Image (cartoon, rainbow, N blue to C red; front, side, top):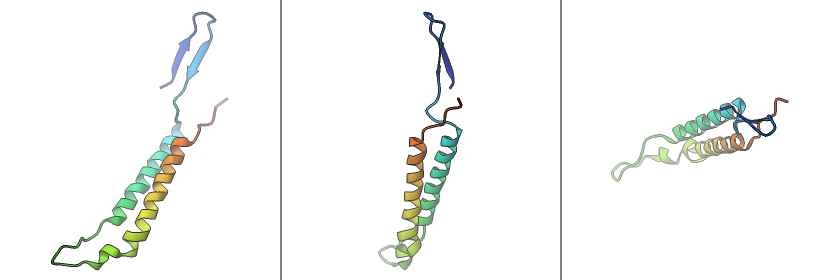
Length: 88
């Protein structure tokens, strides 16, 4: 929220802003969506003691999905660390 505090001594207004702006929130949402896509890429049939499923070692589940999740986590970290630009 945008809050104003008035200093009673000087009459000077101290403006406080959020740590994030609209761009940070959009980048954060995109990062979360990419992580969810990465986890969905890992989903597939499972193996049991009686039935072996070779798809558990597929390229998509072993290589692609973890890289997609990593990219999503990196974009989330970037969105958190990104400093909003001042409107001055």
